[in-house]
Length: 432
Image (cartoon, rainbow, N blue to C red; front, side, top):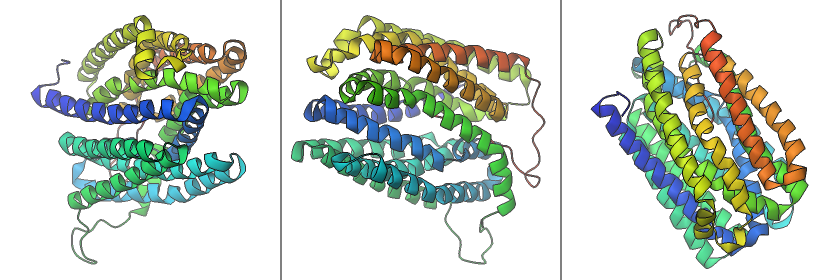
């Protein structure tokens, strides 16, 4: 497909199947819950899941992509790298919990307060599952990651559908999703323990927490984390604006359209998950790097054009089949979002190219600029056009990000060579 060889194509297929299953199961739960909950309660569900997802990114600290990249470059130090990554993420879980509690206590009320707390548990558990996936990707153990994601997907779908059939309420669906996420987290940590069994104290092979490595890791990973945080804010901030400027019903309609836009991200995500370790390894070979980047860019743009055309031409049919006639207002937003899908797919590749070149700070500044541009567009367009206005803000922001990435890749000087492991690692990540 992109000149990566049979093994890479096999990994791509495995990753695609697991990601497709994960997204499909989540979509099934969302689709089933929308008519049961109704537009207003569904809007509250979207708000709770969005806020907790935003806060959960704070537990990453850039360690996810950093772990994948560093393991791809020097697997012989895997124990130290994995220990540091997990310790940093665990340390960040406390302020995350306090933030979720603050939102639940002071921002929302009643059933929505319970939903916020439960979705907070689910988001934290999923963050640790994702970190285990980052470790497996660093070792290019894509079948193992596929099994982990597949089991989480099936648990999510099974628990969610059971809750909707038994309780038919916002609280029940949130309880089910939290329970499924916690069970998946236990599974993921078990997989990680089997990969890196903890030796008894004092025994050779132990990988104690390396404070110097942690400091070096944070120095490199924090710009990547900030970029990921800002990128997620950019993707999710329209949800907050719509809720307070237009109400829960309008948010529910836009949320239905955005599920297609968001769900389609599985394709570029799969391609970059499989190819990113290779991009990181060939950083010092400009000719090989450029050849791979050009092929990946062409593939991503082509996929975006195909998916965008399907959403543009078949938007009404897709919304009607998946969400029902009650969500007809979502069609206009989906057609606008479809115009941005080719840019979105291409931007996945461009930002990963920067990260593979150790350009975390460049992605940070681009993300900040994109968020500022998006905020201005949301304030200008949402009061006037509601959901479609938010969609146009997203499309125009993606165009700005594309131009910025091309400029950064073309004009920025090559990054400094990698330092030795003892001097401290370099780090990378995007959002996601």
